[in-house]
Length: 144
Image (tube, rainbow, N blue to C red; front, side):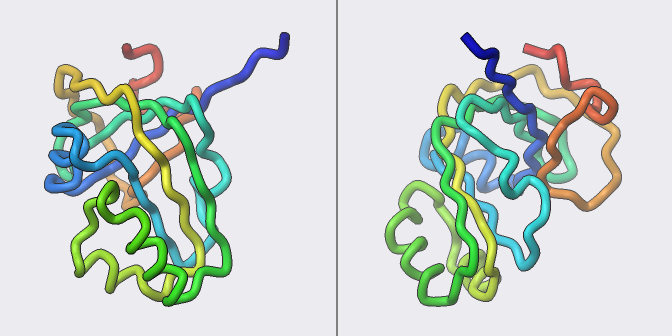
């Protein structure tokens, strides 16, 4: 039986979206981008997410239950995604307007969301999603 390796990710979220995940209102995390950048293609079912408040601590974990990738998105296709999934994404009108011209994206369905003891990490770059590695893991690998 092959061993399936899971990836670990650090996901930075603004407070209202993090709160919506923690209270169960938001069960899909969406990322729409203008370039095909990491983590595009690197998130898979079973991966563990460390959820961090923007400017705050890592305060929860989640597991990816499903993922759907998009390429060559158009504004009408983004409207379609919004209509189909926004109840579970909980995106504001401003969010959708700011993403209307993004050709790449993915949706990650979240399960097993667990609050953890808040943990501050030293992260000073602008990346809003980081695929963790042994070398760059902000001290998170090995945490429950």
